Image 1 (cartoon, rainbow, N blue to C red):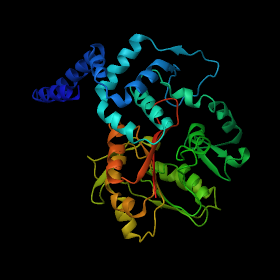
Image 2 (spheres, rainbow, N blue to C red; image 1 turned 30 degrees about the vertical axis):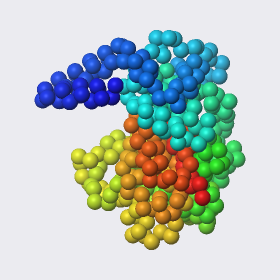
Image 3 (cartoon, rainbow, N blue to C red; image 1 turned 90 degrees about the vertical axis):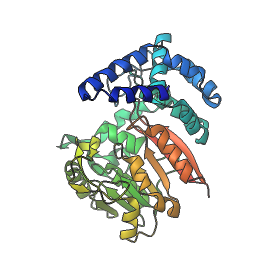
Length: 381
């Protein structure tokens, strides 16, 4: 299916008019989702995931939510997906993903939870119905979401509310942020896998995509005074919020802010599009110099790296190329976000499995929508 799609795209490029090309692509995409391409693709689905996929489609339920960070109404009725809905979902999966690569990623994941949730997140990525089975994993814990509001104080900054996390015994921290973000980072602990992979006391952490400092503070609280957090953030609006949050926590002194975007090298100049936590690198507007993790470690004589977290809006794959030496040398724990593009769900796990044969891999997902899919990895030694 992917070869057919690639062949069609190459023919369309011969037209030479971007608007016409774009319009034809949209028409073909709609036809692809209507015609039974997905049906035929799933006839040849790799054997090692065939039964698992059947199970997930068979058990699939969904919440009909309006946005990716919506919280569930626990009294909401669940509806079984229709045959037609499953048919369209299969078409979209076949369009956006290579099923053989999905099967390879499943084979390297180390437990049943990771395998099932990974497939569910892939299906959810192409579904308009938010929570494609994923909701079943977290419906038991979202009832605690309202607890976060007990920590909210009567103060705002850049449209963020002030939260005192000590009020609900989460952490001795204050920060301006969103309730959803705090719930994912501090309650669900989206950069921790079942206490098997997490930042620990004394760890040196790379926090790629520090945004307003929420994750930097989360890590700093875990690693303690003997640890360090190197927080990478280059968007001015985020840096303002980052500094504001650090000023609220004077007892935290183990965070270093690095005002460069992480990338494969340190010789590229970029700008950014958008703002806040969703700002992405713009290669067409050179203004800010990139920095690779390997160069940062070498230039600053960093003695160790114990944990690398990357949530950098689609630049994770490039940043990993710029971290190969450090990862091979220090064997850090990894928490890498996959949800920024469909291809990251396969190319990032397969890349890491290739360069890190002695690692175990896990997967988790931390919202009812497509956001916050995280690949975890830890050295077997």
